[in-house]
Image 1 (cartoon, one colour):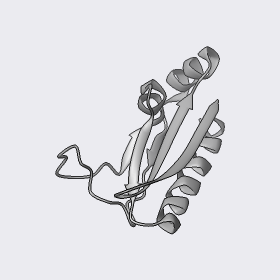
Image 2 (tube, rainbow, N blue to C red):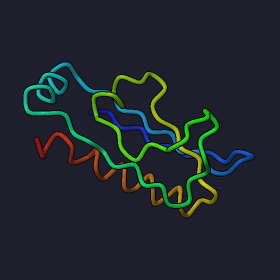
Image 3 (cartoon, rainbow, N blue to C red):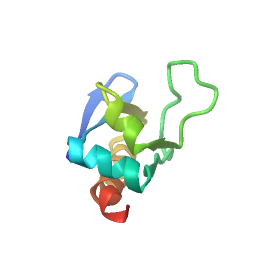
Length: 99
């Protein structure tokens, strides 16, 4: 599994982008053993600009892997962005091991 978690300063705060790429074998294993639900911490998050009334608190690994541009979340400060990035990375690193 290729994991790319990056952050970038933006006018509205710190934007964290999470991208995942699974091999064919990993994708097969994921669907045979069950998809993993990843928790997306909201502490310090800036409301989404896409008009969503409720921010997402979770995403399936298969959905995240299927998003070409990954998932982005904006935070008010770097500390919250780093906490989010570390939490999501830790879940991703153990996602296929747990299944």
